[in-house]
Structure formats: C-alpha cells, structure tokens
Length: 318
Image (tube, rainbow, N blue to C red; front, side):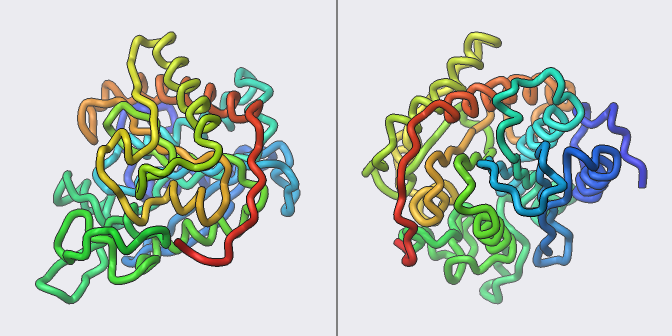
C-alpha cells in the first residue's frame, strides 16, 4: 500500500494509512524515527507509537521525553491529523524547528482508539467509544478517557452511556496500551499532551476535583504560553485552566489525571483543538494543524525552562 505523503494534510487518513505512513517514515528516516511500541485493539488492529530522537538507534535513551496521544475519542478525527503533523514537523522538517524541540525524545501515539475511529469513519461519525461488546442490552464500547485508574469510581456506570467508564479501570486494551507506554518511558517523561477537539482550551489537572496539583502555576504557565503563541500568530483564542474548572464538572478516570497523579508526569495537559466540529472540512486540516503546532512548540519551550517537581512515585491508585 502506497501513501501519498504530499496529500496527508488534505484528507483524513484511515487506520491502515496511518500505520503505513509511520512505516514509510521509519524506513526512510531510520536515523530519526522508529516504531516504539505495537499493541492490538479489541478488534485486532495494530496500534503503533513512534519514537523520534537524534539518539533513536540507542535503545535505552537517557533523554527526557514527551508523550503525545490522539484519537482517544473516535469522532475527534482532527486530532489524528494534528498528531501526524507533529511527526511530520519533527521528522521531515526538523531542520527548521527549534533546537529546544530536539533536546527531547518524542513518543507519539497518533491513533489510540482505531476500532472506534474506523467505526466513526464508516458508520457513525459521532461515535466516541471503543467497540468492545459489553454483554448488556447490546451496549458497545467504553469511553477511554473515563477508564484510567484515577478516581475512576466517580465515572458514569451506565453501560450504554457515551461516557461509560467501563466495568473496571483499564478494562480496555486501548487504555492498557497507554499505561504500558507510560511504564516504558518513566521516569524520563516530563510532559504528556493528549489531543482532543474542539473546545478551544488547554487544560491541566485535575479533572476529577477542584483541588489543584502542587505545580499548577507552572502547568498554567505552560498552557498559557501555548495559548499566547496561537493568539499572536493567528488571532485564535484559547482558554486555559484546570480541567474541572473549565469543564465545570468532575471527570473521573481521565488520562491527564492518571499521568500526573499516578505516573508522576510533571506536566500533563489536554489540548482541545480549535475547530468547527470534530471533523472540520478537509480544506481546513492544514491550517488547523499548523495553528496547533505553533501552540505545541510554545508549550514545550516553556516547559523546558519551568521548575521541575520532585515526586515520590505512588504505588497505589486514587
């Protein structure tokens, strides 16, 4: 299967095309990028993450790293395009990008929930969850961003709800894959960024409580740096704040709270991409990707100069 790389940001790639694009890059730029991990979805689709690094041929890196994921919610197609754009910038256009960005290993998981994504593409554009049958009232799927083992109990227990938390934490192969990636990259991971759409906001912990983490001011500075950069470059306004305050309700089992509270990642943010809907017109993909990349660069550069928080890694869950 050949993928037209010149057309990548003028269309929405299928799951198969995403993986082929990653394979092509790993073959053509073997000194910069490798397939970092492989896992399987419930329906047997391969979930790939990549590692981008000037030391990519060193299997045991000592560099600080950044983890980005996208497509946690099936209908948020634009997030997958943005993740691929980040990979494109770091691999195929790395000569024009900041030296600061090259000081990190980048672990990028561009399509976290491929079963839901393909179902959204082919059957129901508004599908949000995974596709595992639950055995109750013909209900299918779990909201991955309610399935992490952090204040999971406050999530919605109704099987057919779009926000169903799952029967237990990490009930989904897809969220267990993210957990396993965290375990592979700790304690080097300094920044976790989860891509969502389309609320025009940059959010930090906590989602389950109005209680802020100890380093919330530094996390706010990172979020604000991204928002300010986008505003200056494009005029697009982003809100910044804790997830619970911006959303105005509590969310249990979220990936950013798990990253911060359990895996002890100092900076854990959600970027709700500014777009008109979950799948904006194809003619807008390139512009949205470029705008979002401006914000990501600014956040990484701010994070790089922010004080680090010392955590005692928890062996328990909240």
